[in-house]
Length: 144
Image (cartoon, rainbow, N blue to C red; front, side):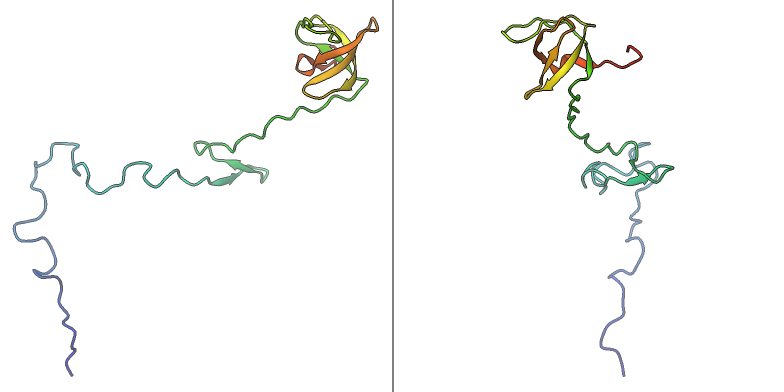
């Protein structure tokens, strides 16, 4: 029998409505079509693009430039082993008892790593005292 569903398109059929429906030539000045608010979401409407993992020639994951690098891990200073020769990087004037005053370039022996960024040093003259560990670096054999 006959189908009970009517198989017809939208009223008026498919295609442009009566009278055209497309903007006549010259309606929009050059560079103004489509008009503002035409239905494209503003940039950033969907949030940041996902971070895409890429791999370098050795198969290590790397960030594609432009998507932002992963946050760097906080710097944790590696403690210098006791008995190491260390070189003073900056002049330091002690402001309290038990702390050494040393000039940049002096070489001392590290006695002990202390808490809160301090070490104990022994100078060539035999003095032992506290010194800030951010002011010292390992004295390498090549003298640098």
